[in-house]
Image 1 (cartoon, helix red, strand yellow):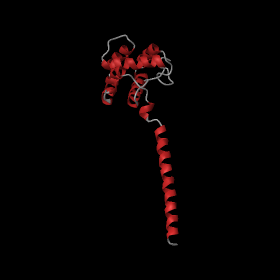
Image 2 (cartoon, one colour):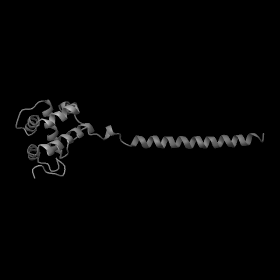
Image 3 (cartoon, helix red, strand yellow):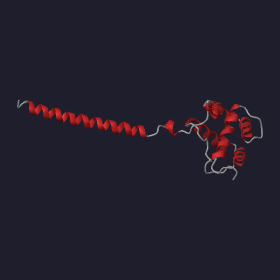
Length: 154
């Protein structure tokens, strides 16, 4: 019977160890559930707005780069955004993004990371390669910081 006592002590220690492990797992899982995921942090955008932005969202990067190398295409989209010309679906998407900028003073409100990067790239090219057109957009939107710290009209 005396040999059973060390065995019971080992079993008791194992139970304490298992209980401690269970507590650790529960605490870790509970902590992870409290951290919001990236999807939860993104702003909910109504489906109608998402559909309006879709042509810009789905625009392949190669096509965006090609469009930005063509002065006539850039002028077409700037005139659409500033409501001085006609628009296609991509132009309407850009126009919506600029209206968001006016409404909430935030670039690309509710955009995905991909949309934000595309729009930021387009604005950078506009500022660097088409300064006069960038100034027209700046004057239309009338939000400081649209083109970063540099005002294209200066």
